[in-house]
Amino acid sequence: MDLSNKVVVIMGASSGIGAATSRLLAKDGAKLSVAARRLDRLNEIKAEFPNSEIETFKADVTKFEDVKNVIDKTVEKFGRIDVLYNNAGIMPTAPLIEGRRDEWQNMLQINIMGVLNGIAAALPYMSKAKSGQIISTDSVAGHVVGPDAAVYSGTKFAVRAIMDGLRMEQAENNIKTTIVSPGSTGTELFNSINDDDQKKFAKDFFENVGGLQPEQIAEAVEFAIGTKNNMSVSEVIIRPTRQTL
Ligand code: NDP
Image 1 (cartoon, rainbow, N blue to C red):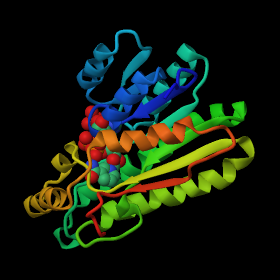
Image 2: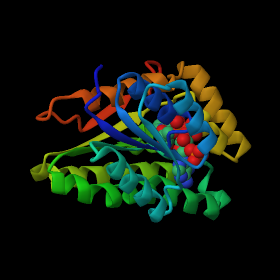
Image 3: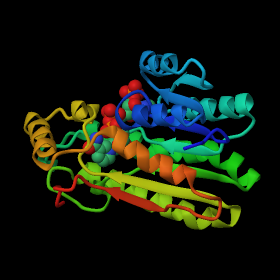
Image 4: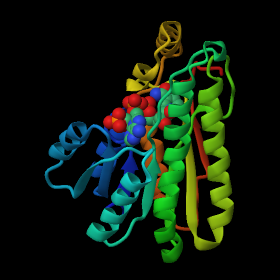
């Protein structure tokens, strides 16, 4: 796909779905700003595409000043921002009875506030330009609740609600909103699970359902970005074919 007319910011681009999307959009010729806490990983991606315009940023999505810096520097460098992809997330699932309040706090901060920080930083530019697209990685868990994933699901239900509100508020400004909701996908996300039983459950589930590869989710993001101005892909749910949840 030719996306050489697009300036795209990807938050949470250092591994998994964000890294796969960065690579795919770089191949498509998009001008990219890629951000995450692991700058070395971002620079590895940049090095793979010496002929592409890729800016890398060390940024923590829980810190508004980091996120704003990424967006502001992108506009300075490329003159505008067409797409913000809020992809950063963690999934430390565990039964509520374990009372892992620090993990809950981290999930709320990264999975929800991270998305809101992106919206707060990018929307003023997009609404002034009367053009733009904000994409967030949601999850099947943003549509279906499962035991031991209550808080993670809660954060992803919140993302879905926030993004739908954004859609309605900004339709008059031609701003597209998209949530991409993957099922089980083979990434580093399982490393964010600290409960041993849950980590095993997530890995076994991935094997049993024939989990997806992050490159397959990236194709959905690419599709949503490549649509004509009058067409907005509001939601995409992508499951491994054998995943029933
Ligand atoms: P990975 O762990 O491979 O990627 C997570 C990304 O988020 C990394 O780039 C990481 O970068 C970034 N990130 C985490 N915390 C922060 C932070 N505080 N600030 C900035 N970036 C951060 O997992 P996935 O690719 O699977 O996850 C991407 C998204 O997909 C998440 O929102 C996840 O919830 C969602 N998802 C994943 C599914 C799956 O089965 N894999 C299913 C459904 C949804 P760094 O650590 O360098 O900061």
